[in-house]
Length: 102
Image: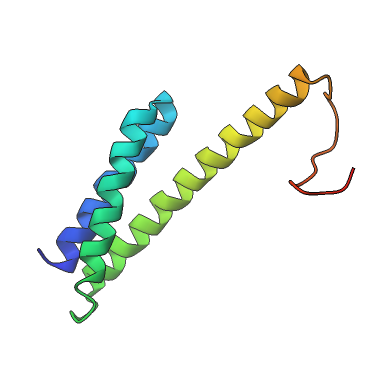
């Protein structure tokens, strides 16, 4: 396996993570994350290989997809926080980071 092959694996796993996030499928998300982490380790094992324009483009695509995953997770967390505030009767309460003094 080359660094290029490993990055293709990372990209495929990130697509699977996005699909799992959209479907709220926790098992699929866990599986995709495991595959992604293994592919990242495989890519790191090839640090001695030269960085070609193709490898650079694949890494940029992986970064873009990872950012998409981060946005989905943040949106989901905001939705859950809002629902919990509604359940606790705190609708409209300003957001306070964990550990902030009341």
